[in-house]
Amino acid sequence: MKPPVSREKIYSVVFDYTGIRIPEVARLAELNYIYTYQTIRALKREGYLTTASDGRIILLDRKGLIFKWAKDKEVILNSLSPITIKLVPDYDMRNLVLFSGNSALWLLGKIISPAGGILYASEKTFKELMKFKDPEGYPFKVYIYDDFYFKIRKELNGYYIPSWGMILADMLVQGTYTRLFDDVFEMIISIIEGEKNEEA
Image (tube, rainbow, N blue to C red):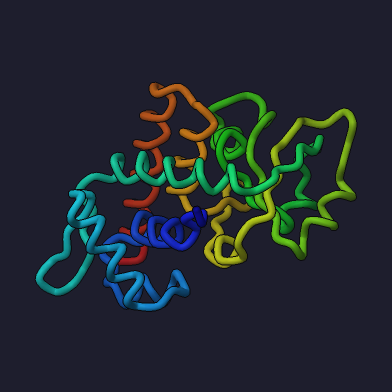
């Protein structure tokens, strides 16, 4: 079975960009309109979202969407071959990777060590990242991932992260405790709402 990487792009855009319309989702996710429309329609049928009369997408069940995303994410990550590398996070490597899962929780100050966290590298930046290997460093799972996430990256405490929704899905795949997940979920929703208010 082909890993659902295209569907993940749609989840990412829908979760992070509130009030967006389907053509904008297709454009941002770099997918064709028909596939995007069919995926959005399936998410509507399942009760995760609806569309307003002007075509804007309204998320009805953010948390439910994240749990659905995490199921797909597990399939995606299992289809890839991660490499465990010991690294000491340094601003010199900030442009080479995206921090996600437990490593993003470390950036958020929710856990004291980034050990075991996920790093995403592109094919272009992976070789460069290997130069930062350090036997005294923290172990990270490094995945070579889609360039799309590097285009929509966000900055957090001097490092780069993928979409907020992807961090939450990765937390679930990594088996993060439900209580911590709920806390981070609420924090991320408030950040997204704050970003939305700043744009307005």
